[in-house]
Length: 349
Image 1 (cartoon, rainbow, N blue to C red):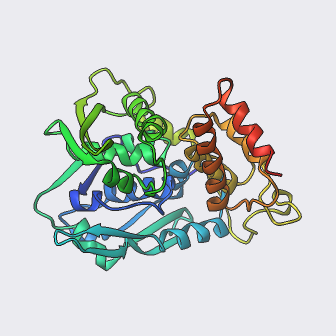
Image 2 (tube, rainbow, N blue to C red; image 1 turned 60 degrees about the horizontal axis):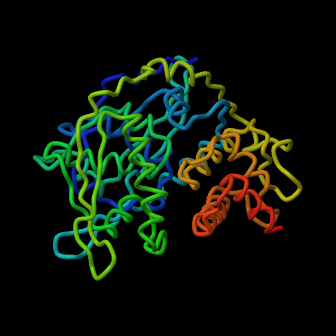
């Protein structure tokens, strides 16, 4: 087992402009990895742009058991092809990748490590900035289980000192990675995103919030005002070091297939065996597709119920489940929401 180097009080320092980025294509795991990267650099020292940490940390971030080199290649390809766009004051934008290199190798003692280097275009937003930034303890990012939740936490943490933030619904959706066409009715956005974030952030982080409509365009809510307060009652039930210890039994397999033959069906789709690291990551991702309403076990059942024509890669299965979840929301089932969702998924065969 590789000793984790993550510290309880590691601070993520993030420039406001970078926090305004649109992150639609970034998964929860990639957002977590970016937080880890920010917690390990010194924004006043450009020479710290190259970050190395034990595979045990990576495993804990991703919630993985056994990992292999082929899996890391997929992660690297995804991470190195994640453009972000930053809005400019003149109405334009700038777009670039956050990272330029991802490396996994063994050190002189034979211990596996992950090494990440920032892209040159991203450096002005990562280093040597004078103001307009905020900080938070890394543990808060790792505690949240959904992409919407992590981004909402950062959006609000940015304005914690002044105690409130006014933001349009459109801009908020963009910062959370939600497309313009998702949740066209505010009541669905409120139920599926705002209320879930409100509950989970209060339970798992150092802040809590309330919100209210701030302005309207016609009959539609245009802007929201969030009221942000320090979460005085929160007591972390599990220390970061304990969390890492629980999740740091790492096995690296060098010359192996991405998924064993026993983990795929005749069409090459990933079976729901739970033995593959890809499978475990996918289940977490699918939980996010349902706004973390259902348990891991319930998501596994839904995953197994998906029709054969749905490709079991991360994006297709996520999009399919998310569309069915929205359909269920619109129909407002009077009984078990899980049972109803399972039913409408099974009808797609």
